[in-house]
Amino acid sequence: MSRPVRRTFAAFSVRHYSRLWATGLLWNLGRWMSIFLCSYLVNQLTHSPFLVQIVGAAFFTPMFLAGAIGGVISDRLDRRRTLRVLVVVLIAASAVMAALNLSGSIEVWMVYPYMLVIGLSMVVDMTSRRALVYDLVGAGNVTNAVALEALAMTGGTLVGGVAGGTLVSLLGIGEAFVLVVVFYAVSLILLAGVPPIGVRVKAAVSPRISQDLRATFALARGNATLVSILGITIVMNAFYFPFTPMVPVFAENLSVNAFWTSILAGSPALGSMCGTLLIARGVGFRRGRAYVGGSVVALIFLGVFAAANWYPMALVALIFAGVGASGFSTMQSALVMTTAADEVRGRALGLLSMCIGILPFAMLTLGGVAQAVGPSTGVISSVIVGLAMMIIWARRRPESQQLV
Image 1: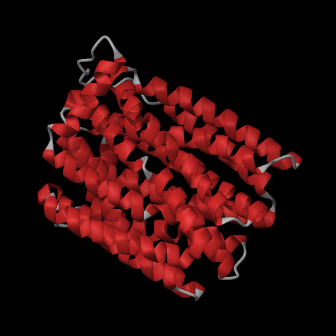
Image 2: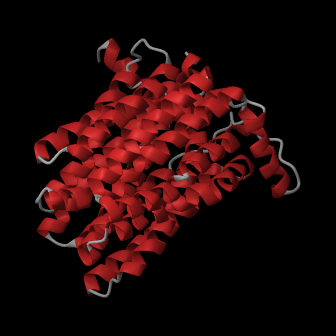
């Protein structure tokens, strides 16, 4: 194996990381396939951009409501056991969705509780599983490991969406949910092979969770660099990512079927995979600049996508948006984890999860605007505001751009 390839996949040399990475990949396959299937299902049943946006809002609501608590749990409890319990819940919930769709008894309202459960899995992924990654690989490999984590996420988004669209076209939506159950079941088997990690630094926890929560929010008040990082996260989750559940609406306006809808939904992931592989190889640039600059590129190309009235143009625009978003998505967890002290790393990731959790409100806002003025105008307006906010924040709080 050549040296650049070894460098790209350096974290895999750490024993047991491949199992933890594969678990994350399977979670992402199940998660993003579920989001695509639920968005597609609600759009087919209602043809309402607002109700489609509620799918995404339900998914991200736990990020806001449970982010800080998830961080405290990550620092207090055995992270492997937390992951195993959650996967059992995911298997049961996905099996119920498969049964409801196969029997033809599914109704629109049933989608939203399921999305809440899937969103809870994202909280645990952000706080417990990623903190476990740091425990396993250490500070020296964390940037490479987080880049590979981002690769798993983008790969799961791409393959999960395309697989969902293909199965819906060939077999049906119920059969697609059966595959989601399989993904989670295999991930549970892989987790069983991840041993206790003895190098973990135990957090100094207080007797009461409320005190730990106050300490979590105190992290932001006392760390200017962390505030700078989280501000960029808020802007991106307020003005870039809210469009995601609305892709089936754009695809319907472009007159394509379920398969080509899934290709369009997965195209940002394809671009993000390309960008993430470059980052994993250790391309020489400041991590902070990749974080901020990639966010700007993502917003610009999202605007191009929203304005496109030709499918190939929309597809290419989302691919380039994904390339830009790779700088953001890869770096945000790595920057937060390296900025926070060992004993509060889970809580810092909980704050990150809470910032991502503004997405439900942003999605509902975008859904309401799209319902009133149209999807294209709504997304373009969001992009313009997002770019303005990004520039203002980057100038007022430049700390994150200075991180190497």
